[in-house]
Length: 194
Image (cartoon, rainbow, N blue to C red; front, side, top):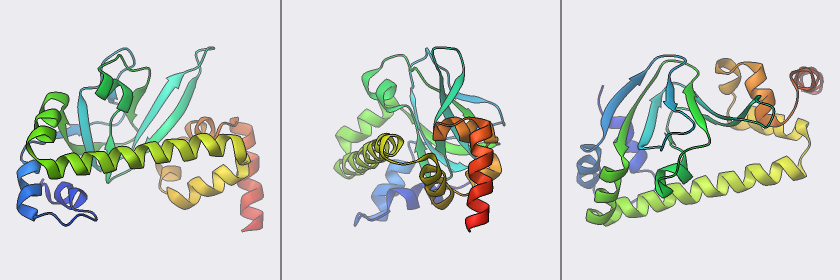
């Protein structure tokens, strides 16, 4: 497996020499995970900054009653890591596991910091990834307050339709903040309207 997609990911919207991104990519290590494997377990410190090239992952926590609540889905072409645990070196409250066989490229916290200090272009790239992540998190938080479950369903269907082929409906329901039964009703109603 080559690092072509990883280098393309670095190069999105940046006017930086491909040589620099090739140099950065050399620090990333290939990783393959089977379906059902954990990329991160709650209670552990997140130490890998993973570019997901192929496959699908899900982040989840356990609520006060011990039920799993999906907090995020990861699709090919995204960075997978628990930002608070990774940068603050705290134990993660989230689990991240694979919904399918996955392949990607990772770098450790120590390696990432070394690159941030030695290659300014990578620091800029890292900053843009964090801004996108925080923006997405803010949008999701606001949508849980200001949008109906039907609107959240429609947005997920529009932004990540492939999730519906790879994630069980119970995981999608918990991500949308509804019960499995409510999601079934929403899907039926949505199909009638569209």
